[in-house]
Image 1 (cartoon, helix red, strand yellow):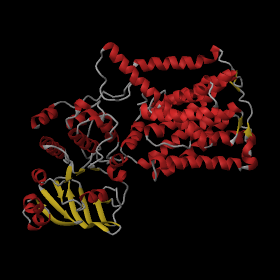
Image 2 (spheres, rainbow over the protein chains, first blue to last red; image 1 turned 90 degrees about the horizontal axis):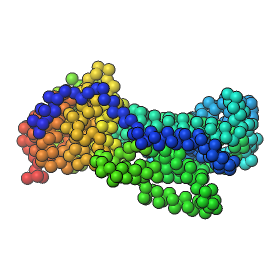
Image 3 (cartoon, chains in turn green, yellow; image 1 turned 135 degrees about the vertical axis):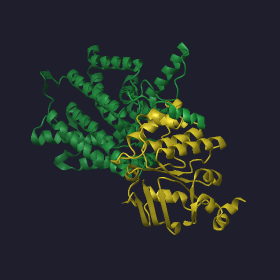
Image 4 (cartoon, chains in turn yellow, blue; image 1 turned 60 degrees about the horizontal axis):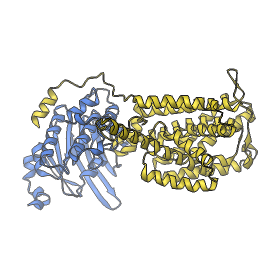
Amino acid sequence: MAQMAAIAEARPPASRQRKNRALPSSAALIATAILVVGVFAFPWFNPGYRALSFAVTTGVTAIVLYGMAIPFGQAGIMSLGYAGLMGFGAYTAAILSRDFGMNMWVAMPFSVLVAVLCAGLFGLPSLRISGHHFAITTYVMCELLRIALINGGKFTGAATGLDLPPMGMLLGVKLDKLGNAYELVAAFMFLSMLTAYCVANSRYGRTLRSIRENEQLARAIGVNANLHKVGAFMLSGLFAGVGGDLQAYNFRHISPDLYGGATSLYFALMVMLGGPRTIFGPLAGAIIVTFLPEVMRIDPVDSRIAYGLALIAVVMLLPGGVIAAAGRAYRWAARALHGAPANSGSADAGASLT
Amino acid sequence: MATLEIRALRKTFGGVVALAGVDLTVHSEEILGVIGPNGSGKTTLFNTVCGVYRPTSGTVHWNGVDIAGKPAYAIGRLGLARTFQQAMSFPALTLRENVQIAIEHGSRRADGAGPQWSSPEELLQFVGLEAFANEIANTMPFGNLRRLGVAVALGGRPSQLLLDEPAAGLNEGESVQLIHLLRRAHQLGVGICIIDHHVGLMAELCARLAVLHFGNKIADGPTEAVLNDPKVIEVYLGEEQ
């Protein structure tokens, strides 16, 4: 051992130029390119009004899910408050439109600001409680918001909710046409995906993962875990604010029931189904949960039973979600076909966010 | 050189007195061992010094700065690092990411004291784990995990390292490797303070020993003298004979 140590010390220090930034694999880049083209080209396949409006809902939801994937996937803190945060964004947009005549773009920063501040507030209990306890607390906060909105009188439109004006024009494009609104939402969705990817692969992403993996050790090496926990929630609130603003203007009518605990549970289902630590997971989850009952013609009530079973199945059989499982299957198939050496470790390369 | 001064440190949990007013001075030039039977307050001492617990009373000064009751992360940033007996690493991350996180945080001292690392690879090489940089921590054998724990602590450029039973669960060969590693860390100018039951290991590694018994320090001095102290033999070593 002493000799080994001497040899180790005699060696020159490891090269500085290596940055260790894991570049996305070519397979992942090709998959991303196909996805981007496919998503933007979707309206040209004449999917029909119904499918297109489902797609808009999916996109808006996915924006929020990419935000949710940061505290949940990276910092390991599951919150059931995201429908509520989206609601703060949506109601801010609706109220600013009604009282001050602000359009979607002017209202967006305000929606984001309100959602970010509320996200910090929703995240505060995570400093004291964790796991199921924290999830339940945020669920309750969401339900409280719904009750407050119902009882908000004229200010929140009570149970009926609020109406919004049309989206208007952007650079000469009429956004009120569903196909155009879809492209706008798709652009924001990809922006969210990219942002989540960059966060996960940054120093900040690593810091959040250290809290997820071993909070005590993270603190001992100088990580201000409390600050970063609340910070991660505030960052995810940004996504919820944008999503809420876009949703309000796409639906043109919002009501308290959109933002209760039940919607939050669906969000959680989507993220877990798709996989919170994979780049395509949140989008895949949103697509599956939104489109599956439509495609399979399942009754909405029956579909809830199906989702419950699906969630249990995913947690037990495919931990990490369907995209992580697909990545594993792809690597397994590649090894079987080419006889390539096994990928060392169990890091989810390729489709992984990290 | 850095100094940790613990004065009349007391920590109680309800009616249980874990530390009954401990005085201990730790200089970073030395390798100090803290021994004592189970429940004598060794781990509580580290936890209270490092901000996991708030002291009931007493003072802790690190380089003249009062750190008693400061949060753990703030103490870590002052260059006082520790390892944990159980929680050694970030289990689902690669070894490279484990040490990279430590390098990106850790000491923020303006004087740049403590060992400097130009890359995660350099640090992994220092602890002899460079071949496993891309492996996931929880796939590592226990001996490697212990060394990774030391690497994560060293990554934060500490001036003083507090190690909580770093050799627990290691076999003879792995313990010897660990002793070498700690000696080399010490040569980089990092103070080493180590808790263990293993008297043989402590006698080999440490020049000075302090003995805790029911939250009291009953001996403190050169290893040889402490191990021959009748009081120490009675409360601690006697049990092993």
